Length: 247
Image (cartoon, rainbow, N blue to C red):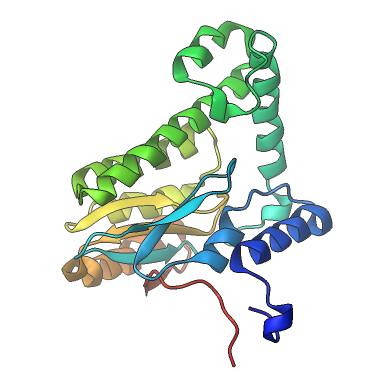
């Protein structure tokens, strides 16, 4: 990855170094997902990362599915966002739940039944944040199965549920992101659409049948400026291998 073989940094280690830089220097208490995706991508695949064990594996994307990124024209400013606040709210939920069950170390250890049983003891905002995370963890597992089985209807439903939860429970969407998802999901041939990244602007990711990419572009360029006053960008993309050294 870097310089010669003697100083080469393995992709996963490089991702961890980048995370430490973001946490310690920039001050955003981010997880590993973005850095991991950039360093450890696999051509033609999604990647599943277990952030506790740090095990990961590629998940092949079904044939006949294209990826399209839609930029809202509203830039994302993560260092000035409520990202760190969301993390503190999730940690507060964990602390409250751990009072009754010391085995709970993160929301990874919490079932929806456990969370709902403790709802009256949790701050309402902390409960909403935790509910999003617990349900999203389950959606990830369901999405892995749906992709493996090429069940595109299930994938589309999971994308929709994820975006709604990010909008209503985690509250990290924006009117621009919501408008972009609304436009995309109205286009025949769009399998699924949702915001991506930390939110508060930025992009949506869309799974699209190849013959519908042009219609999606047309719909976005026509409707989105009228809905928001902003100029969107449409990027058909491919899942590729992670960043590497150019000789």
